[in-house]
Length: 84
Length: 385
Image (cartoon, rainbow over all chains, first blue to last red):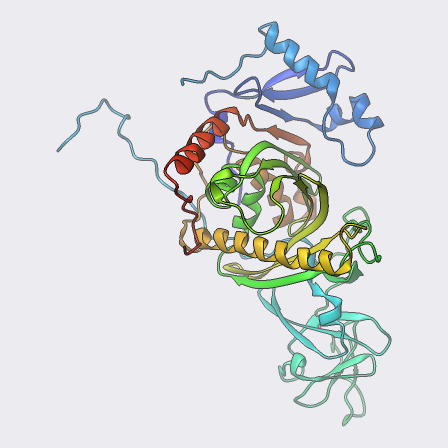
């Protein structure tokens, strides 16, 4: 039984974003300013400084978040068009 | 009336669904409370497509074996605990917790291959867990159920526990962890923040909600809202650190939500609630609160069940941008249904998904205000008014 890809990715796939702080490469998709999906891989997990420092539940890397927002502002990461 | 549309525009989207998997998830499953299962009597549990017997031997160890005696198929759960062994009611064959037949009282020796299936067990925080693995390997040390801080001390109440059978495949309850909008439509919540993180064998939901003014005021102090951090550790056991916000302060509770499959089309759903005691909330009040919250949670599950009972299994849900990561949680869940060697990085790599609650909140506040203006209670599925 294989799981299908998210139907929402068909028209707007996830895009690579690098962290301006540690260089970790993740895949990101934003359907709005407030909505964010982040796909990590093993390399990114090992690279992220906050992740390595984090104890217990690691909820967010603030540097990565800033880098994603910068990517949107600089036009490198488009926010998925909302027709409404 | 006919409608003439360009090709493709009026194409109908089909629901697609494969049959539920015939194998059962690898992982720790809670079978219930040790205060119930560990009383020295044999207990019968329908799980993982078969029947198990649970018994505590004289040595104090809780054991889980296949319930059917390898001799002539007697049901060991109708038998008797004798010493450290379970004795079959049919011919008194004695089976040890290691699955080996220890003794056949009327025979000179035990036949070869007198070994039955066992499940590794773990007792923790008042619960009995079994490790299910179709490959029959031992549980890895890094795949554990965390202990719950405070539980078992006199600062928290005993578990208020509830068990029920749900007649559907257990994927439905897993989907719930990513489903923000159903909290409004099914459970009468008003979500204000919602995020999921999946990593390794853990899937977490961060959820904040406000009280809905159109639900009317119940008895006692009004709840302003809730903050919840709920994690599945493996395929079936969720610990929800659930804080209720009142005007006079916060109340910490822990809600367990766990299940084990009976077969591919049904599961046993269990939940437990414990409430933190304090000077303001002594033993009696805390236990009353646990029972009251339990009734509330029970109502919530009944609302879910009302949907599950009638819905279609769907492998290709059609999602809008305000929905959660349904496909990704299923990808995470898939790791428990393949051999350990076949777990792929995408099933366990970290994935974060934060929902934008702006638009949902606008729509829902409008609905709430309409209800208030018309002096009308919201219609919630599964509840009779």
